[in-house]
Image 1: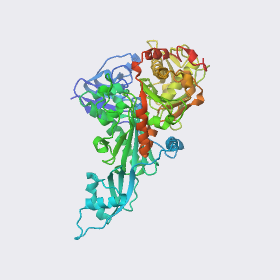
Image 2: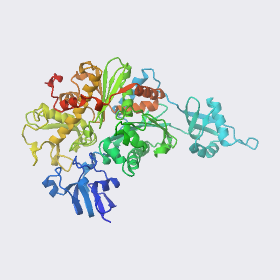
Image 3: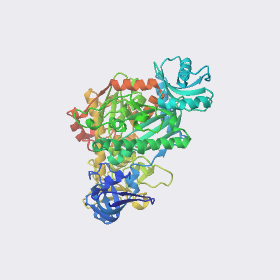
Image 4: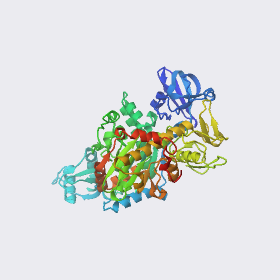
Length: 640
């Protein structure tokens, strides 16, 4: 059988045997080699590049690879087939989209402030930051020939006396430990319990006197990125924080491509494995290793994710989400445990799922809505979560409605030739001199970090600056010339932010007319959704009093630039608030507070879901938005 060798710039090599005629991208996926393929191998995005080194590789020429690049060995893996032994190089930029895991510095006030504020704001409404987890001390008489009561009954009776609860649930994992722990501790023990209205569940048992932290895990599963918090359930203290790319990214950048992949033989298992075994479990392992915490002492989890990610995380068919009438397997469920899904925590850990509202408005939005506090304010507020799907909530303390639009992965770097997640090497902010057209930018990472690509906030800035400086037209076409502006053999223009010699990349960091067009459609989807949702309740933009913007697209969004390009409504800038990863903040508060968890379910049940595809005027609104800033510039009086 032919062998494929994937070489990396750090010198590592992954080798795998395949059947002759195998697709190179599929081979990479099966070998867990990260190659960025936002279009899931449809040949549309041109980002799954590898460099051919040697061997027998059949590869079609495409418009995404220039003649010069083709001669240098560059190929698209999705249109390449293995005909014999092959060696290819996987460039760093191919895996930049699925970046390595990042551990947060909790000494940084910025890293924990958003969670502390969320907790404080919710407490001020009268919601208690308390949960059902407790650490209980239990003492028992030692058995004797005169007292031969079995260990489980002895322990259960003692726990009944301490708690006053009649029904005690002792799972197998705890019962298995019970005999040894009782005798090691002279029948003086402590146990981790979960207390419900009519029963107690015993998660763990250990000797009295042993220092124990009752751990909890909050996770935001995004289509592109995953973030997690490890917390002390008793105090709410954040013990560790981590983030990284969703391992499912190699199966496509958007949920539709993921769903299609899940329908193939073994697809559901592959996608579940990608997010759990390749993403979440390594994140848990790394967080626990970093602080010396035992994984089996994580007793509860809260997961916030969109409706599709919920299904794929659980290994449940999501296929009916994309087929009319768009019915999910569940909106809310209380039936998942860590042992069911293979999560590296206590086997009996209960998994709380933030509730979904619609097929494309999920638990990430309901959890985010909780921490925006718009449900507790009389002012009309708009909540926007920028991700692969753009989700919106509008309302106040009397009503809330929500909708979702298919923005595509542009806000997180997908569908952009040099796009990447907001991680080391990403340009996150940019200014352009209107005379010289020279850029000045800031890069995520240590001092001296060279640019690799553009993250979402950087893309917004670059396009806004190109438009402000008169370098591109309202259609996104280049109308000025200079050393940083060039055209390829097909006449497509591009603007170079960093030439190859100044970049930490295998090529220039540039933004093309195709990139700008993709982003204009993404921003158009957001603004048209806002206009359509407001019109459905006879509101207009002037009635918006606050706008909360969430999403991990950079350290923050330049709101003025976002308005200038027609992504957000033209209202006073001081009314905009960037709130970061509100999904993770919401998951944190749901995990810590049983009342906050119940409140999130209440919010979900009270939201009115608007299916934009059923609104006749939506497509007209969308088409009108696919210009900079809009076909009707009077909607943006502050700039035009």
